Image (tube, rainbow, N blue to C red):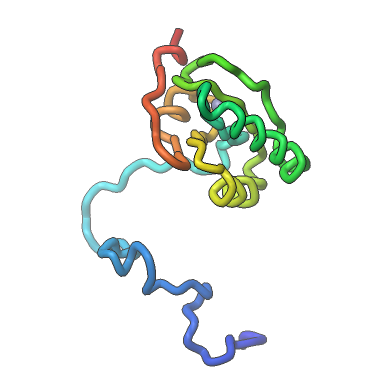
Length: 156
Ligand code: ZN
């Protein structure tokens, strides 16, 4: 027997309110598992060695980006390795940028913090699995607006 039941007993098994958000908007979270269609090949997330978050900016948002970097250096000091402040496009990144590198175990803390505190800047987040093209092209997450990457830079 479970040690404790939630008071009131109206919560779902995982304590999530499944009637809100996407599901209510018409995107059911449950998948039909009875059909016979071929299953897609899946990758195990354990192949993710680390994550990067690249904060994008330009001449007009330079000071905002600099200020955010200073705050990150303090508030996420134990979670991320901060890269250089590039005032030019580097690699596949079409904007000026700086990089945060972090371990998979830090993903919830770092991405949650950035989601609430990116200060209007666009942030490109991708896993590192050893396949650069797939990581940047297919594994991309964005805060704010998305941008078109220069993927050719990854195969040069
Ligand atoms: Zn990166």
